[in-house]
Length: 227
Image 1 (cartoon, rainbow, N blue to C red):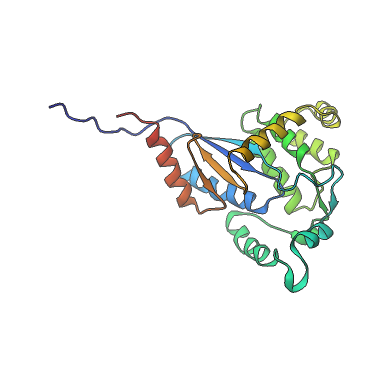
Image 2: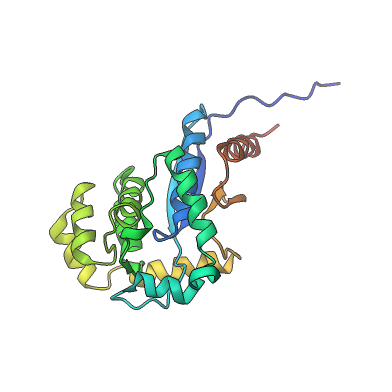
């Protein structure tokens, strides 16, 4: 009787799609926790950023942040975001994040930010660098990441052509493609972010500890190995 072959470690690249929005603080925290796991993992992991808009009804010019948050979460003792904010402020420093919610003045529409990430991903790891810069600009530096000048500056910082980027942002290049991608992930049942999709087979949702991602990476690699 032939012996069953044992599975050998796979060198297959684990593909991870992170569905996120750049005004979602849990998405930044979740990415940093994922990145800790990726650095501990001894096999290649490829990350792609996928768009999601927590609130597509925000107008293109954005809204006053404090008024928006008050309307969405309440104020004073009824502030539903207060406990979450305290947790984020506690957990952020452990992964090198300095959340400064008091410095945020505008709640932007994030369609253009997602367009920028889409273009940046054509340049090796510039997608992740762009996402990180957008998170930092919004949550730490209090910048309006719906503003074309801010997005154009970030484009230059990650090596994109600033004149071309500004021209594209002023038009509607890839707006429909990004919106269709958002609807695709909503159609999959994703209603909360961050969502990490491993090899298109299963997902890890929320800002989970690195151990959850390490387990997912190992599972994804095993699923890609034949007997």
